[in-house]
Length: 195
Image 1 (cartoon, helix red, strand yellow):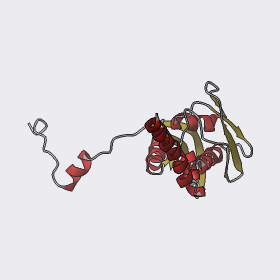
Image 2: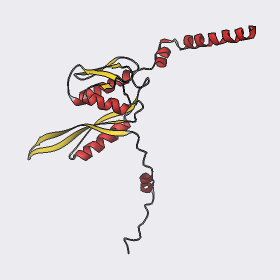
Image 3: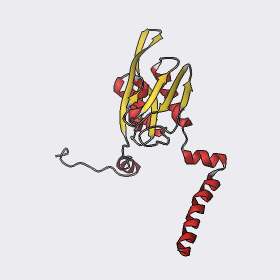
Image 4: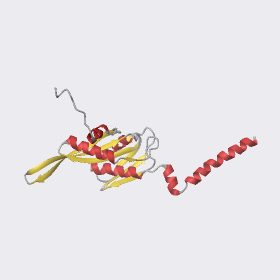
């Protein structure tokens, strides 16, 4: 009888359970490694997971999670990656300009590619590009081959990317560009009146 009648949760806990955020984007596990900690009684085994989360539209996040089970490590990494996602500009299906990202001893060079080129990159960087929604790009690892540092170097390169409009504003050319676009429109209206 007691199993049939279920009580509904009351108070703050009930509100917390209902207000779960909608999951954005897909999660990809890049690397899982087994770790060992030497303690007094022997060795304690653990796992480290490197996870990337992306929405396929220029928003991506990367994190490392550590736990005694693989699933727990992946869950930790995914939660952290979702909290620390970054947004960067995309031009068509590629990046706006050439850039080099550095993290530790790892360096990643990336360059925009023509439509139909595909993602030409190493395993870690490739998964990051796919999660971010970039379909045409050339990338090369120039330093360390450590998967964690490579992925973080790619993220540093993403942070450096700027759109054309952003660069114009930084250089103070935004007003000049707008004035140049408005001037031909004014000339067209005067010609139309004359005709």
